[in-house]
Image (cartoon, rainbow, N blue to C red; front, side):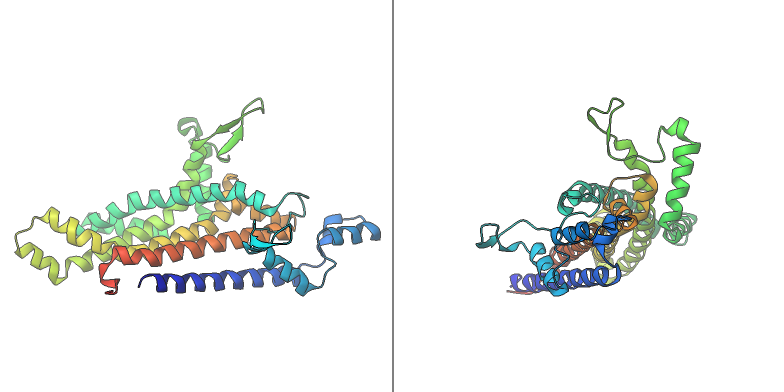
Length: 337
């Protein structure tokens, strides 16, 4: 049955998340020093220091803090009234923004990072798949060589370099004609600072920057996969049966060529969440990547741990969904009941 493999993959995903949470917790608590002293800064008040440690539970033994941290991450545990049941996930509170839960900050920024990643991957798919397929239909021609050259160049271009270059060229040099700016978030206040305004144009340059590298990978993967599929016997058999070229390409070549693309797309989609750190910082996009950079600069370790765990959870969930989607994309993987 398909339920057992799904439960097995879910259990593996939970083990991965536990490993990430454990590694991140001990890494920051053993290397970072005393968080209470860092929060107080230059203030040398022993009473205030002990009060701050007690408020954040830093006066507890390390293993006790670890157990409390895991309990906060679990959706099942001891509720505020003392009973057992489902509860809200608690990632502690921010050191710098005292009293603000980490989950509240992630709820504001993670959707914007997800939106940016989805827009970038959509752009890469819309452009990359037709490019790769058209190159495969005209192998060893000038168009095929052009697509290979452009896709290779896009794959070799680092995101942090392309972000600066694209921001400068389209957001500064060509700004009078493009109407784009070098920095800006999706939601900003109006000129009077009273109401929020959605600025979708600010997503254009970050989307273009993040989508360049996966676009190149998708174009080359689609080209190679389509060439391999078109050399198979069942494609020649379809032509021998009298099927038109369009029908063969649509029914046999295109769908089968997409099978190896699933792993590529999923890996890059998950990677875009982590790769958005540089891009969000350059363009001033208020996402999880920029939030994590700001938290590292201010040594807000609960917020950094929350960002790392949330991005890891996104990666694990995407990989889990992709593994399950293989059953639908490739019927050969389905086990007979």
